[in-house]
Length: 360
Image (cartoon, rainbow, N blue to C red; front, side, top):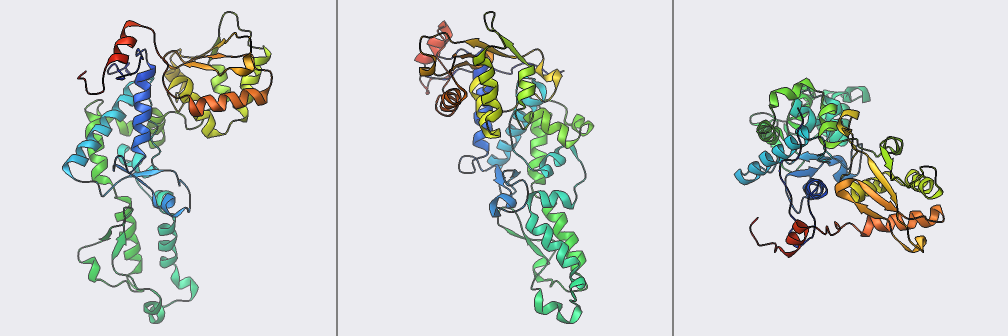
């Protein structure tokens, strides 16, 4: 059974009372920082992203070079964080990971498509080498074209042997297929140690033996939520304040603006209103939650920005006069107004007075 929150959040120096918004914000910020190699060396942009070639250029791998005791402890904690997401309906950790990582976690077989999914150049090079005879290259001239040993370059830029003594074994026309097979195996095993440690962390929260009951895509959805913000789905899970007419012009303007937004802008909108970057993966995960829209009554609507309440997944929306005006105001708000608003409660005031150094 999936559970609720694991802890309560207090942001030192911010008057936020945690009714869910600050809690979700922790996971949103954590996921964002995990994608920054200069902050945490746990994830590595895949070679497709490094070389701007192939698919999944924005996806990451578990960094095979991060193997110190401290770094492995971080990977175990990462597994615990993923465990939170598996247990809690409202918790998503929006990690952009390659299929090879999710498959390692659920013990699915890996294949050449997974290699192409993070290193297209390598996958193509190996395929061409295997079929080099189709280009008229034979044993006599192979050595004049190919100067390789039984080693390969890993995703973090380290050259590694693909078999014992590989650096001293020359690739020949006769052994080229064996070389390609070994390279694929080694490349697909990258990050296996780190994945095992992540599984250890997951197992501290939920039995890791249950993961193979799901496909890698299902586990990714459970952890990360739906990758794009489907406006129709969001609209289906929207409720309106008692004085708000769903067909009112300013409400229809909001839906037009969201339809015009790019995928990234819709993600920013969801973060602005709910401190999440993805929608729940399934109807069950919505668990009765819905976006709530209220009208922000003011004398000059075009001069006001919308106001969000992330704890309650709600927004006060002015009666904007046009789609263009509304789009400009909402874009400014989701881009520049990302701090959590003050909660005028006793706990909110106490958190505002708390220093960052104070023990919680």
